[in-house]
Structure formats: structure tokens, C-alpha cells
Length: 288
Length: 308
Image (cartoon, rainbow over all chains, first blue to last red):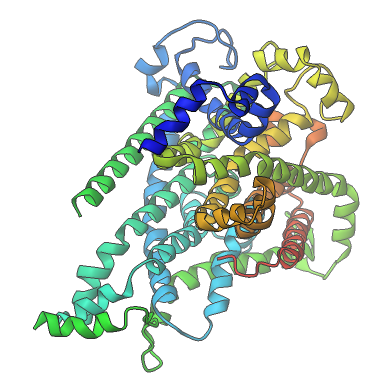
């Protein structure tokens, strides 16, 4: 401890090196350049979110909500006031929930097969799961459209749902597989040592340990589905307008302030969910 | 009793348990069946239909027939090669910029953030909490011609620099190649940062200390230790940025102008408005193949085979 206080006292007397550091701004800049870039990167990343929130209180003059006019809470008190927006939001939520359930079930089963078993055709399966993540959305959207057109399958909500499960499933597999790979296999052995049969060991040991990974995969799937525009647009009809499609249309016709209200609400909800999750897991870690 | 049971487990702690290999079990195949079937029917089969569609001739009214007309590719490419090359150019630029911005960010979170690590990670994914179309529209506000950003660029002559690089044409930032590349970089930055962070975080800090003990200056230690160990993250991050950026057309549509059109926009238009399915399919298939070739060459050169 005494050695730790000594250098501080020396700094007080201004020895050569810290003083020079303080005088030369270039040295300071060079030493902190990584942190400065990081701060600027955060500004770059978060500035649009801040703008979205601020402009949810705007009362624009024209049809477009791009320039600040004056403060108003009109959009907040009349969220569904923009015609068609809340309907599109409801459709996106419905598709999002159903696609999440589908992708999470299929993806979790595949993740257990890949994480817990050796079998022939493993590399090929991995490749099949990797490919949708390495394919641009426009290619997936247009190829699905070709399939549906050729087989005379009607476009619309069902087609969108099929597409969403398809492009979400790989992300669930990767997330859950990572969690399974991080498990200590000795825990399951311990369960077996304690006379649990295979089924009990799975449900009372393995599954609860993998559950956070499944939850993370499901959240990822929902946000991918809810946010998708390109693939959805290829497989939608005029009667199946999702929220991103509504926003896209609004960008051409005029953007109601309510879009920003939804953007702000989504942001706050997700932030609250993440913060709660962090608190719960850290409290659990503290108890353990 | 429990004590005696625990002894064998404790005496061989390092033995990793092999994934249960059971007598040629059917279990993995049953688990895989629904997901694999879904991907085969709704991912692989559509690719085959896409390839087939690109080799058909006909019209919507009279129907299409497979005539193996390879000429569609030549016609499509001679008409739209500039959009295709532009897409790869924009995507490559956005990837390099994303790496330049994302690496210091990931580095700071992994090594300097201390107990703020989790908070900063949440901030990296926070943009996703708002729909990306809404955020891209917000850039229209930020880059608007009477805004502070444009004012700053004009005052510092950065605007002149961008103009000499042909990234802007007049005295504005919106509706320029600069805005499109900036938007692409922004939209895919978290996809760059998260894999970088994952590989940086795994680095044993003692390796860097060892480098210092061996008289490596900080930059040398970075070049010889940190950077090589973070290469898997660099490869994953650049791929996760480049691939979606090459196919994206949201940014070029919302932040660009008619001379920043990317290939995705052309495919979308040919499919949904012009209704020329063979041309659209040929372009889509070309984009897919070009990306596969680029990714294969890149991954081989970067020397990391294992990505997933």
C-alpha cells in the first residue's frame, strides 16, 4: 500500500514524464486515440436513436417529419392516429410471435442434435445452417418468390411466416449451440451418478442450463422477424402490410410522427427487458 | 455414499465427455428432421427454382418454359453491371470503414471497460431496439442540408475533400454516395463489433504482458499478439458486414439518389415492377454466386476455415 501512495506524491512534484504528457496534446491524443474513436463510434451508433426519440415530440409543418418545427405530445396521445399503422404493427407482432415459436422449436432441436450427438452428415448439416446467414436477403426473398410463383402458392401472411421461420432458424441454432457447447458435461454425469435417468437428467439439469440460450435465440429471432423488410416485401400482398412495409411506404408518401413514437416505445421496452434480464442474472450469480 | 460416487468423477476431471455416441442412434436425425426439411424446402429448393427461372424464356401472360437460354445472363449483366460493381464497391468500403470504427470500439469494450463492459455491450446492440428503417430515416434528418453535420462538413472543408473523392456532388451530404456508404457502415456496425469483441475478449491478457516483458512496444505487441489472435473475429465481422451490405438497397434508396442504385434495388424492381422474372432471377443468382466466390477466396486467404 505504501508503495502505491508513493508515486502519487511524486506526481505532485511534477517529474518530467507526466508533466510533458500534460503539455503535449499530441502525446495525449496518441495515447487515447483508441478510446476517442470508441466514444465517437458510440455517438455514431446511437445518434439516430436519439433523433428518433426527439422527433417523436415534433409537430411537423408538412407531411414529412424530417425538420424540427415545435414541441408537441400529439403523436403520443394519439398513437393509432396514423391510418393503417396500428394494423400493420399488429400484423408484425403476430408474425413475429409465430415465427419466433417456429424458429425456436426447429432451431433448438437442431442445436441439440449438433451439440450432443455424433452422426454422419454433420458437416453438410452445418453448411446448410450456415448458408442462409451468408445469403443476402434480396436473394432469399426473390428465390422464395420464384418458388411460390412456380408452385402457385398464394403470397401473403402465410408466405411471410414461412420465410421468417426460414431465415430466423439458423440464428437460433447458432445461439443455442453456443450455450450447449459451454455446458459442463460433468453436471449431467453428476445427475446420472445421483440415479437420475436420462430423461430426468435432461429436464432437471440440461434444459434449465440451456434455457437462457434458447431465450436469447428466441429474442434474436423475434427482432429479426419484426424488423425484416426486404424478404417480407417479396412475399407480401397489399393486404399483408407489416410495420416495416408501412414505414417504407410512409418514407415515400409522408412520415407520420407516430412512427417515431413506436420506435421510441420499442427502444424503451427492449432496453427495460435487457436491463431486467441483466439484474436477474446478476442477482442469481450473487446468490450462487 | 455420495462421497464414494463422487471420487471417480473427481479423479478424472479433464476427460471431456464425448457427445453421447450410442449404437447408430436415430435420435440426432429425428431432432434434425423438421429443421433440415424446412431449410431444404424453403431455402435450397427456391435456389434451384431461381436458377431454373433464370434459364427460362416466355412472358407472364403466356407462361415460361425452360429453354436453357443462357443469354439472359449476358443481357442482364451488360445492362446492370455498373449497379453490380457499385454494390460490391460500396459494400467493400463500408466493410473497411466498419473495421476501422468497430475495432477500437470492440477493443475498448474488451480490455478497458472494466465493470462497464455489460453496459457498453447493451449500448452496441441498443440501435437494434428501434426498427432499422426508422433509424435510416433519422439519418435523413441528421444529414439534412441545414443541419449541424452539414454545417460542420462545410466549415472544415471536409465537404471539399469528399467532393474531390466524388463522394458528394454539390454542397450537401444527403442523396450522395457518401450518405449511402455511411448508412451501410452504420447499419452493419454491430455485426462487425460483436464478433470482434467475442474474439478479443477470449485473449489471455497475460500474453500481452508477456509481450511487454519481452520489450515489445505496445504497438508491436498489438501487431504480433492481439491482431493475429483476433483474426477469427475480423473474418467473421467483415463477412457479416460485407454480405448483407452487398445485397442491401434500403440505404441506397433512402439516403442516395438515382446514380447510387445498387443491385438489390434492380432485382427488386425487375421482380416486382418490371415483372421480368428471368432477368431478375439471373441477376439474383449472379449476386449469390459472386458473393460465394468472394467469400470462398477471402476465407481461404484469411486462413480461417471454421466459421460456425
